[in-house]
Structures are given as structure tokens and as C-alpha cells.
Length: 173
Image 1 (cartoon, one colour):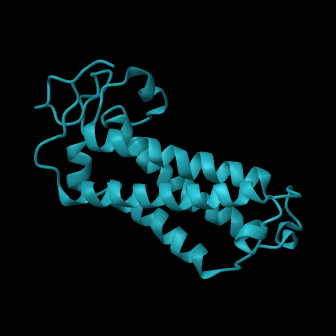
Image 2: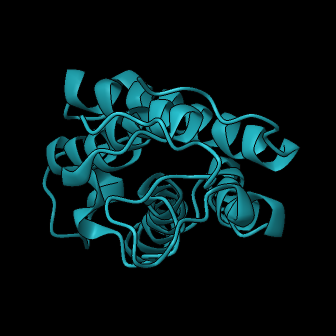
């Protein structure tokens, strides 16, 4: 059975909070764009898409919901419990870290890139873009804090990875 790791550093809680807030905010934004692909629900005119490959908010809404809403929402449990799900480590390029840590880092990078592309294609249209970019940086920085990295360390030879070597009774779900 998966159990919470004892003695989590405060940075781990910060990372989980930031990822949770990202999941909630992006899910709401993605659902709002999908509810009205003309942008009416969020009071964003289709003219902001001029010069982009998109004619409606369908693809941006799906991308926002899936990559920045559901993906981070999926990460909350693994960041709390560090399960040993072999299948989930497939895209983990940091073999010495639990896959949930790596994927949280990915989520922060995706958020920063999302805002970069948004500003590149649409321009700077709202202060929320700055707030979101800073949130992405905060996720990256909190994941890279040494105590957080130590918390999610695994043996590079161990696969699937598990956080904190003292937790040896993890399930192999």
C-alpha cells in the first residue's frame, strides 16, 4: 500500500500547492474555452487569434485542459504518495528522481512555454499572463529546491523509482 513519506520538507507542500492551483485554474480555463469556442465565456474575442494557426479556441482550450489542467491534476496524488507505477515512469528522463517529481518539473516548463507561445502569437494582452508565467517559474524553482529533490531521490538503478529509500513497502500497482 502506498503511504505518505514521513518528514516532507515544506518545499514539497509548496510544489503540491502550486501544481494543484495550476490544475484548478487551467481546467477552469480550458473548460470555459471549450464551452464556447468563440471565447465569449471568458470575454476574449476571436480577433486575438488573428495571425495564429487557430480559427477558434477549440485547440487552445483542449491543450489548456489536457496539458495544464488534467496532467497536473493527475500529479497531485503521486506527489503526495510516491506510488511505484512502472507505466508512469516511461517519460522520466531523470532516473535518479521519482517520476512524479520529473513530471511536476515538466508541468512548470509546459506552463512557461504556454505563456511564451501565447505572447508570441497573441501578444501581451492581460496581466494574468505574467502571473501564470511566474507560477510556472515557481513550480520549476520549488521542484529544484535541494530538500525537494532529496525527498524524491531514488537509486538510478532502481526501476520503478520510489521516493525516500526508507519507504521500502510500496505496492507495485
